[in-house]
Amino acid sequence: MNSLFMPRRWTPSIVIVFALGLALGFAISQLKLINFTTLETRNSIPNKITEKTLIQMSRDKELNSSLAKELLLEMEEIEARKMSEDVRVLCWVMTSPENHEEKAVHVKATWGRHCNKLIFISDEDDESLPALKLPGVRPGRDGLWSKTVAAFKYVHENCSDEYDWVLKADDDTYVVVENLRKMLLPYSPKDPLYFGFRIKNPNMPEGYMSGGAGFVLSKEAVRRVVTEAFDGKHKDCKLSTYESEADDVLIAQCLYPVGVKIGESRDALGRNRFFPFDSEWHTHPHNKDSKDWWYWDYIWWPSDETVDNCSDEVISFHYMDKFKMYMMEYLVYHVRPFGVRHLQKYDLEAAKRITEKENAIKS
Image 1: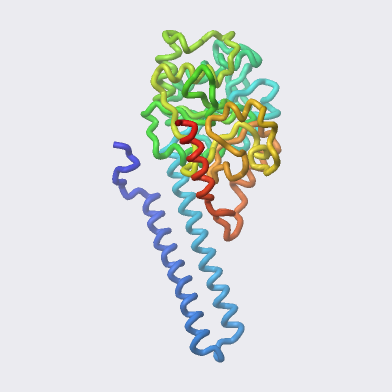
Image 2 (image 1 turned 45 degrees about the vertical axis):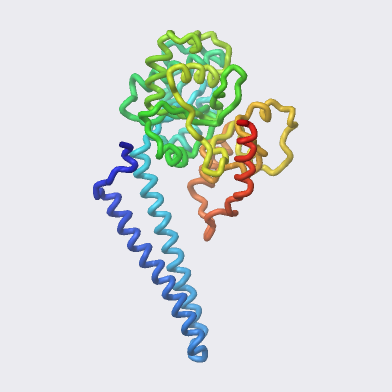
């Protein structure tokens, strides 16, 4: 049975959450009491309430409201820390020597810190990152597929006790790892699963996941692709190091023959979590590029590419330079707008339209 639904022991983290819950309940009750007292007092003896008393009541109300919000945030942080133990993510990042200082170090300084384990795969060893050059890897863009094969072999053979899920990303991808863990939480790493930004391919009915947006494999999917597909017995899994096709297409051609299944990577409203371009392109409300561009024909799910199509629990953006990485790190982990949970309510009508478009495509 999935451990998600099993009764849990009273661990220290659960005790802390329980205590915080009691404190939160007390704070909310005090907040309501102040509201009730203020209303009763104003209605019954308005002449006896001084301006100073009303100001103090207002301050007490704000204090209790702030305390309740801080407690909620603290509870979320405790749950996120617990989730990092239950949903262990190994991140391997594809890079090259010329990008070690220009890109890879900034991945390490920002989102890479949030992975359970971070590995850079390159054409040269670099102890400062560290980056690994693995056997059989060819240099340059022609070697991207050889890097991909070598990387998954390495993590399976050397790190199998350190992860439940493996994220493959580029050195210009930005990832919100906590949101990735939350998406993966309902799934079991023992199932052969594959997540990411889905793209159509005329030679693959299931499509494939964009490499730049980052894609995720469960532990079982990694085991299968390494031990059953990379053994050279499946004709659709092309292992030549000189293969010229894109590495994200080639890995999909190796995953499907061994029974790896596509997982749902969008949120409950059908909004994308993984994105193949940068944050500016996907969120800016300008007119997008010509509809003749390849992107519109190859994206799996219909999209108007506005901020309404971006999940509140976004996971990744691609083509993020070092300046955008640090900006994202600041906005995601430091900015806390007071009193703001969501800037707007969910657009249920937009979600309905997305569902209707999907049904039309399927029919």
